[in-house]
Length: 317
Figure 1 (tube, rainbow, N blue to C red):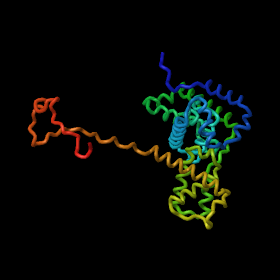
Figure 2: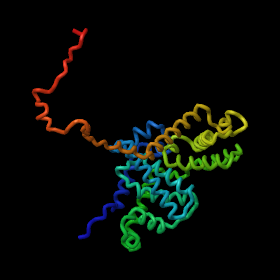
Figure 3: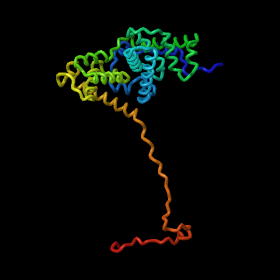
Figure 4: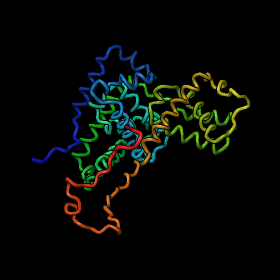
């Protein structure tokens, strides 16, 4: 008998999960709330209840974002569609646990749904093949195996089951707002310099990969990003000192969001910091003074007759 593939999943697994979603208390009310506090994200996510700690969940979040970026580039879809898929995954794992749902399957289904939501059609067959080749890139025969009828249809059914679970978990709420449009509007309104605009866009790409989009609305993230980019570029924006008020962001909220952003930047810096080099190994060398003739110590000074100096000094006793 052939050995079962280590990542083989069944459609029944996702169908049972979908049935579980329908039994949640007030699903429509719960899934309509897509913004959470930092405490809710860090302490009360479904994965935490299944024994997955914050560090592990952060690693899994980074993993599916990297996977989605690779899959989207392989399929030649826009960055907006890729970011939309990332936010779908973020929302999904605030309702479902990583312990029960494979992030590569959910990520693939998210990108397929994001293509529909962003009116960027992508054939299911292309998504299935590209995803399979990335997941099993360590296997040289994967690109051949996925084109076999049985393997292709089995993996396609798994992706479709993941799509069904995504839809039921999100209550079919696919209208995802991203910070890109409010950022473009803010940059145009403030007549920002190209360097500042480039820095702001790069920041937004990074924020999408974090839970920041689960904590704050897009226009808040966009406004704080412009302020942060201006600070790094040492540039002045706006005709008034508190220009962010024009975009519906209070000074208190702006400071709060920027503090979160600085924390994320510091965490990323520490994560990417190379480990310190090991301390140099010190080798002990026993040097004998040239003026002293090397003799056997036992013969020169027997243990019982070492020349001792009195510790007694005048004026002490």
